[in-house]
Amino acid sequence: MTKHEALPDAALADAMMDMGARARAASRAMAQRTPDERSRALSAMANAIRAAESDILAANQKDLDIGRAKDLSPALMDRLALDAARIESIAAGLEAVAVLPDPVGRELARWTVPSGLDIARVAVPLGVIGIIYESRPNVTADAAALCVRSGNAAILRCGSESANASGAIATAMRGALADRGLPEDAVQLVPTTDREAVGHLLGGLGGQLDVVVPRGGRGLVERVQAEARVPVIGHLEGLCHAYVDKAADPAKAVEIVLNAKMRRTGICGSLEKLLVDSAAAADLLPSIAEALIAAGCELRGDEGARKLVPEMRTATEEDWQTEYLAPVLAVKIVDGIDGALAHISEWSSGHTETVITEDAAVAERFLSDVDSAIVMHNASTQFADGGEFGMGAEIGIATGRIHARGPVGADQLTIFKYVVRGTGQTRP
Image (tube, rainbow, N blue to C red):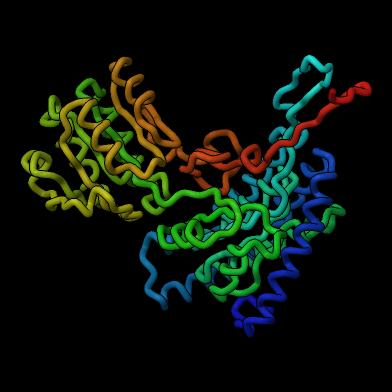
């Protein structure tokens, strides 16, 4: 089966079930490996990525050519594109994961009960993890690395846009695992872009798949959450907000908002909504807007914002619920921290929000009352990233309320079991 080959339903089902069985066997072997063995494998994977740079770039060029032919948006093309610097960043990310503390075997808690039993809660791998993602080929390496670090096996299903580059990356990593004596089937890339393959993953591969992690747009995540027969770790979208308080430092506000929106507009941590305190909007908003417009950002504002910055287009209700992933920003004037909290409560996707203020009380209220996976004070939302959190990498930003929330790193890819030690106790 090749990356672009469509198979009859029965053949595809058999192929996917075989992947699941091989992943299950690999996951058992990975869980029994020592932390040092997993670390050395990750370092070898990083070196293999570097060695395969020319192959990866050639494969990526094929993806880019196909993307241009499909007239993909600039944001999607940016997500898709690789160059030498980005490949080095991928390799460096693998090395960062390699030196992380191994999460497997951590004793999370321990106590003794009146019967004399010694009970410990110990971290163990989740098992076989299916990761479904779209156009970013670096996710292939990030996801695989985190699964290896946490003693799991990964079945990766990339989008058709990144099939060639993702295949080259996966091939390099599998070779490194084999060279280190670890099962190469701990990292498998679904070798077809047939959408039915996603359906087989969501069905659980006959009990071989333990959890699914979707990383992509609303359509993908909604399908996964609706159809999955196994637990899901994921988020719908990043409707990230910044609230600029009347006590904000003006220069700091300009720099943070500009970076949060324009550093990379196509990532889920990109700022999408700007809320400005009405008490100081006349002083703060024009300079923020000037910097954004100069950087090529289109602004869409409510009536109050447009009075201060007439160049803005009129914002509609749709703008408050849209993740642009483009140089577009919706702007609203709000009545202080209460107005900001009310707007965020109504419209946020629960991903990342930041407050810009020098008032400690306002900052603490924002951090306490905003119910999102990540809340920030005087920092760009672009820091909503597992690598920036010291996790080496991430599979995604989870916005749910079960098991994992925020950046999903190696620690979040473990579950636990109870280890009970006795001295001959029987229950009366």
